[in-house]
Length: 480
Ligand SMILES: Cc1ncc(COP(=O)(O)O)c(C=O)c1O
Image 1 (spheres, helix red, strand yellow):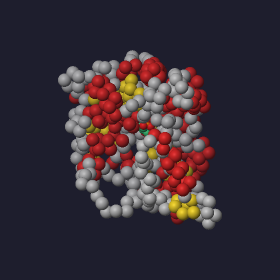
Image 2: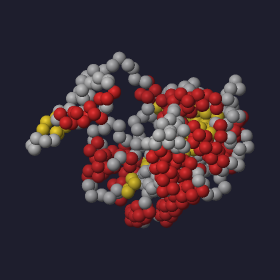
Image 3: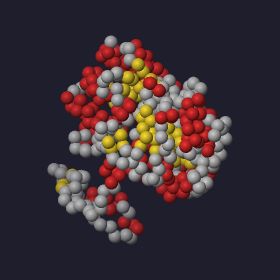
Image 4: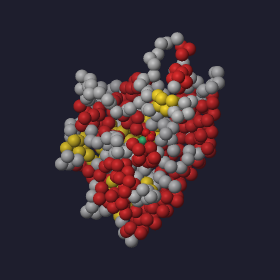
């Protein structure tokens, strides 16, 4: 026992002369051999009834239970099995998957629900990150191993991002903010605009827009009858309107979140549609937050950035990500563009406020991730990313062909790694359960992305070819 406790002290570095409290209550006892300690882990369940006098943030209390996320796939399955029945936080998909596996322990579950990439990060990129990380062990390990965030590396990445993705639309390096991901930037943008703005989202949409809006206090409570939060304008996107909202019926809002190619519907806005959106924002004096996390999946002539639309710099912020191109969901690297021309009502540049928020809440993306980002944008890195994207697009075609051959109407899938499959007259959750229970496949119920998503499931093309082909076989066995 003493050896374990001593090791714990050593780990905290007794050399610094600080007096530290002894390790907290671990029950340690010698094992039968007497030479090693068995330590019961500290219980993570609160063992007292003490409550503080702090009131819960009322905005957080408005949030509905995590409906879709985190997805089961982000956990090691064995760990999840242990954890699942004890955690109140796990989402319904993970619970249903776990319940299914408990009933059918031998089921070989395939996930078409996962929204994260599954292919390995290309070696040209990991090699650059490995080199960068080794620099941290070297004295004066410049260029990519400084103890603090390397400003020269950041500048190089901003310049390269501006050139690679925005070369034809004239975005300057100072308008690019490099970050730890688009999702984090969505939250920081909400923080920038604050609680008194009004906002609109596509319905269905990626849940982060709505949830951050609730947390920051822009909304009233969730209205169960319509499955919407009050004070958010839900812009209906369905096959009837070609997944583009009817702008003529929409009220003005300060902020308009718009994601293209869209998660979950897989639809992408055409040039004409984006021109209408920019004109609508201009007329109303609104700001568009344009999420382009899947832009590299576009293979037709839909714009890859909102700034292809004349006038967009005066009305739009754009956020992007390496997650879906290079498998960076765990590495964490993204960016946000805030053009100089984008101004508040009083003429103050939005960029300056976002710069302040970034400087206050964020100390810069890790040097290692940024070195990886630069490698992504090298000629070899770009080719490797296009290959990975191409692989998922081939998976998408297999899924689209499968569902179509079975007579289903499918949407998306051309410019995005998602297929939006319609099951007329049925609830998304019924379909989800049917597919899980009968053929051991996890999908994502459309209603989790917004009320208009009911009657659809999202099938994701992130997965191995073997799994996608096997999923295709099973779907054919169920529905043909
Ligand atoms: C539309 C959309 N935006 C942003 C993100 C998150 O990107 P990041 O990993 O860079 O935070 C996702 C991830 O699923 C997404 O689907």
